[in-house]
Image (cartoon, rainbow, N blue to C red; front, side, top):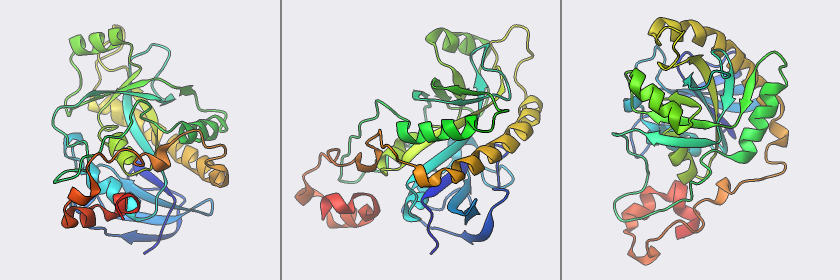
Length: 291
């Protein structure tokens, strides 16, 4: 099976990776079922990249129904070490305008009904998650985005992940602003947690589509508004991905994160007490620590 060290999970509007050559499609079954769609593996700027549309082609999967465990497991099985999430979000700040990009460095979890860990059935794992996005990969993503010159990119900020699929009420939106969050979306979690549990460097390119519901002089967010801005954002997101691929050789130089050994001290269960079938199930993720 073809391998790729860089993976991209496309958000709303980003259902295929333009400019990808030597493309093959793979269907991957995981212990958690099938991913959102087939995964395309090809080359962008000569670099092997695996691409997966988070909501499926044609946008068939609601945020709460995204099979995130299967998606992250599939990327890990393909050798992905650096995983870029592209996510449509609303802005909670006047100066972060629709069509801008923001690369968040913090998360606030307001989801309610999502499984947020791989590990169950006899093995307990507690990963550090104080810094939910990979600092090394986020830096490379920032450099790639700013190199375009005509894209406004905001560095750092808190991404509040809500359950959805409905947008916020005005009251919720106003309170979230008082909390000091910067953008609001529906898909960064549990992805970021699962990427950490899989020892994958994870970063998000948040594409601003609207001002959520708090803005007094802007109309409340609608699907029509989101789609119109998505089309513009997707074109620029494709350009950022190409610019990132051009910098692939320098990823991890210098390495300023611990993502690639996040599980080294995270397994609390005594190895001899972990059932053999559980060890086998998690061999892809835990094999080097339980052998």
